[in-house]
Length: 398
Image 1 (cartoon, rainbow, N blue to C red):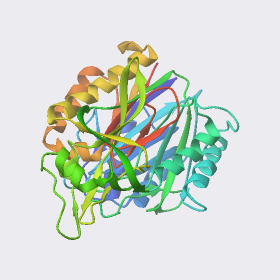
Image 2 (image 1 turned 30 degrees about the horizontal axis):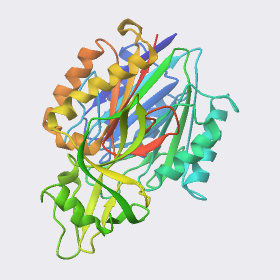
Image 3 (image 1 turned 30 degrees about the vertical axis):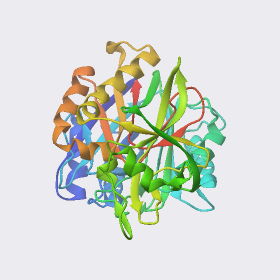
């Protein structure tokens, strides 16, 4: 029988927060979960949370990482400017769950390949195809990491995830390892639940008429669009809302959150689906840096959203996941969501609205939401993609 329960805490120490969550989950009928998804505020030492949870749940597979300001659940809005912890625990006697985590040794792609194989072995299902794969990596090399994971599980397997995050983009994000925590690593979980599982991955942004082709780029830095300085083009597209600095570089994460750059990633009928890239800095040399890799020849489209659309799209992605899996409301037993941390910061004063909309969409269903610095999924049948300012929902049946 598949059971799930959520818990959240704002206690000021890792021990108090973890133990409060353990008590909450036990009170909902899960004393020894098989699998737990953990989102922790980066101000809490993740290694201490992991140690305490393992002491209480020695048999549980833990998929744990830091999340921007913590996480959110149906049982409480744990996110705050202080400390927070959010957990979804699953008990599933006839399902199998495997987790593997490690530092980036030998490159991101090799790490993704190695961890995916180890997670399958940890689930006791080596060589098999899981119902869904959860991934989390520290920011920087998500594209190569995902390629390694997909090499193991194949292009038809749903791979859903969110990059580890911190509260202020200082690099204090962490992934939980078997021992300690890593600021440069990844975690892979292979899920073989006893119930149906379905997922949706979307952006809540609309394309504008402003677009151009990348004519010079390297990694995550764009130098030219249509043979003109990328910074000048972006300043013009945003009608001066973001300006090229005279010297150095300016952080534009907040200023660009409602005006990211999109690339066509597939079609829904004849409607383009966009994967988003979040501009990070705008530089005096005319370049722009982003949180995704960009290639020469890519067409970039200026995308737009409002705070209202960022609030409403969470429940909309859940509806899409249910439709994709043909799951009726009474068939849903749990939900996992990855919601971009940059979007969350834009609407941080409306998180109660988001939580309320999810509870209205999924009444009496336990869920957890992580606020990530990069999101991974498939916008249409095909390969997994790494994007920014995206949202995903994984819905479990019953």
